[in-house]
Amino acid sequence: GVQTCALPISIAQSSAIVAVFFSILIAILVLNGVLTAPTRALQLFSSLLTAGSILFGGGPVVVPLLQVGLPPSSSLFAR
Image (tube, rainbow, N blue to C red; front, top):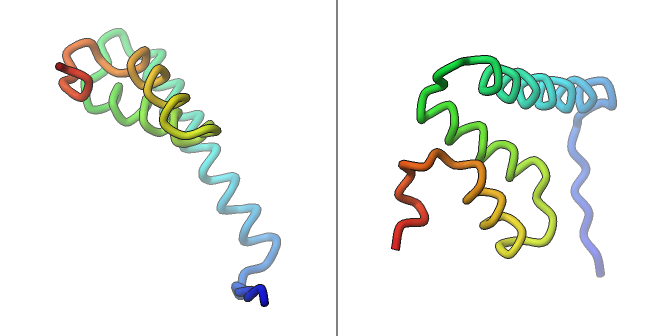
């Protein structure tokens, strides 16, 4: 049969966790957009956080999103 796992966490606690996550996501995206010269690490973190947050469909969806969002000097997609 199907096994379930109940976590001892309240709805208020889970709501707080979700609120903190979206607050961090928004803060990072705003910071990356506001800075005139964001660091490479911030650009990378922002791109990966965005891709991970809106991930639907796996690799075929994520790779083009990361290619657009990563800094041009990133060697992740170098051939």
